[in-house]
Image (cartoon, rainbow, N blue to C red):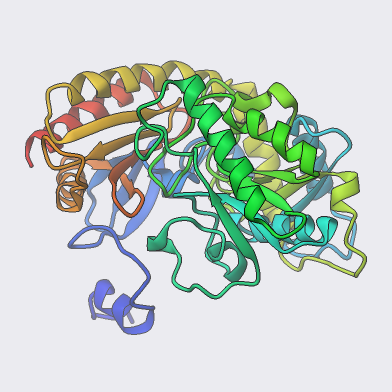
Length: 430
C-alpha cells in the first residue's frame, strides 16, 4: 500500500535536520529528459542546476542508460579485487585526458572521497599533515575535507586531523585585493602565500584549490594565479591538488580542466574529479603521477569505487561528451547566456555581479546600493524561478548570496534564452 503521509513529513521524520531541501514546499523530481525534469505533480522544469552539476550531458541520455542496463544484465558488482574491464577502460581515458604525465587513476564514489584520498596521498608522500587551502573554499563533507573547507556554512566542526592554512586569492571581486588589477592581484596573492608559508612549521604537504569555487558561489581568481603559486610551491616541494569536481570535463568552455587556465608551470600533481563524469551515477576519482599515487605502503581496495555499472556509465558518458564537442557547446551557448545575464543584471539593482565561465555562471545578489548579502532576495528569486519553470542552485561564502547556474552541457540556444527570460522575470518580481 502507498503511505498516505506526505513525503515531506516522512522526510523530516527519518532524515537529519541538517539535510537541506530547496523551496518552501519541496518538490519530488520523478523523471527527466534532455535538459528538463518533471515533479510528482506533473510540472515541467528547465533544469539549470543538473543535480548540483552532476547531470553533465543530459537527463536520461540513451547512450548512458543503455550502457548501465547492459552492464547490470551481466554483473553489477565485483570490487577492485578482480580485474574490471570498464574500470580499466575509463581509467585509460581519464589518464590520457588529465594532462598529468605517467598518470595513475583511483576511482571513488564521490568528490568528497576523491578529495579525502588526495589528502591521504599528499600527506603520506610529504610526511606532513599541513595543508594550504583557499578562503571561501569547499571540498566535501568527510572529517578531513570539512577541516580544510574555508566556508563556515559548510564546516560544522573545528576539530581536524590536519593543520590548515588559508590563502588569499580565490575571490576576485571581494576582499582586500579586489581593487587591484589582475597582475597586481596575482602578485599580492603570491606575496600572501609566501607569508603564510613563513608561518608554517616545516614542510607543507599540498595546496588544494578549486579553479572556480563551486559552493562558494562560482568565484575565481585571474587566469594564471595558480600557475604563479606553482612557482612558489615547487621551490618548497609542495604538491598542488586541483579540485575539479565541479570544473572538470569542459564545463568552463575554454578548457577541459579548470587548471588549464593556470597552466604556465605545468599540470597539478594531483587532480580530483566526480559529479559530471557519471551523469548521475556515483563516480569520483583521483589522478596523480605514479610516484605520488604509489606512495602508500599498506594494502588498500575499494568495495564500491570502480563499480562495473558506474564505470560503464562513465565510459559511455565521456564518449558522448567528446564526440558531440560539449565543451565547445559550453563555450558557445555559455558565452551567449552570460552576455544575456549581464544585460539583464545591468537593469536590476539587486544584482551585484554576474560571473563565471562556460556553463558555470554565478549571479550575486546584494541589497541595492551596498555590498551587503541579501539571502532573502536569493531565496525569493529561487522560488519565483521555480514557479516560472526553472530550477537554479544557491551558494556563496559567509557574506555573499549567489544563485548558481549550471545546466547540462548539451543546453541549446533556445533553452538558454528561455531560462534567461524566466530568470529575468524572477529577478524583477523581488
